[in-house]
Amino acid sequence: MINRTPLWLRVVKSIGLAAWLILTLFPLYWIIITSFKGPGAIAAYPVKYWPTHATLENYQSLFSDSQFGDNMVNSLAVSVAAGAVSTVIALLSAYIISRFHFHGRTGVMIAFLITQMIPAFIALGPLYQMMVRLGLSDSRPGLVLVYIAMCIPFSSIMLKGFFDNVPIDIEEAALVDGCNRMSALWKVLVPVMGPGIIATFIFNFVNCWNELFLSVTLINTAAKRTIPTALNSFISSFNIEWGPMSAAAVLTVIPTMVLFGIASKWIVSGLTAGATKG
Image: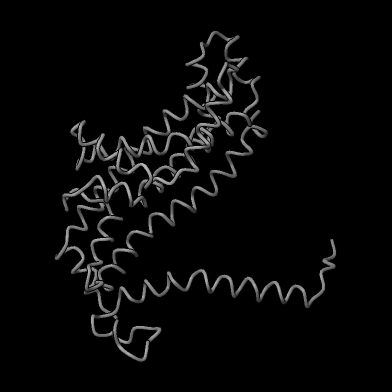
């Protein structure tokens, strides 16, 4: 097939995409090079766009002078636990909403959508009081429970879309062969929906990994902080520790970038799973 797009238009598009790519990647590039600069080089003038004397001092001080290692472990544990539990709960709720027609089904979907329109910080005050009364404030299990509740609505909507893409004939065939509803779900539908389930878990993991407002409100002990709260601690009333904060940001961004890359592939695969495997 002959490309009939004019040459000048292709050149303009290429220049526009290149400019957009530079603007998008420059902040990440600046954080990376700042993490390899010494304290004097960060505030030096004129500004240098490449460190003349790269150093790992910021990364060393990050783990020696702070509890960032513990913060990474906390974020990993909280994100994995909340992501896994919320994905399982959302899987069951999405299955019911997708496969059964009951009174209030539309209302449930609307309620899930409304929760996505309300900023989380609006509920911080009542949520904090509730967690204090339950004895779950300043604890990782309490933060996991809050993250689970936060992730379930959107995860249910997301998984419902995946269920809708799986032909119901597959499930009916399993029921005819002697499976009940639960065994048909776990033995037949879950393997078919594997990409969608993995994509949902990755979304929940990244959402919990990057969350700040709830963790700042509910966690006070430095050793129990998650990564976003630890990054926030580098900013004080009179100073910003740019070096260690940039190093921490680089270490924080790497897993989320990898997971987002994986998630995009699984989401596309999940959306077409019903048509290709049905």
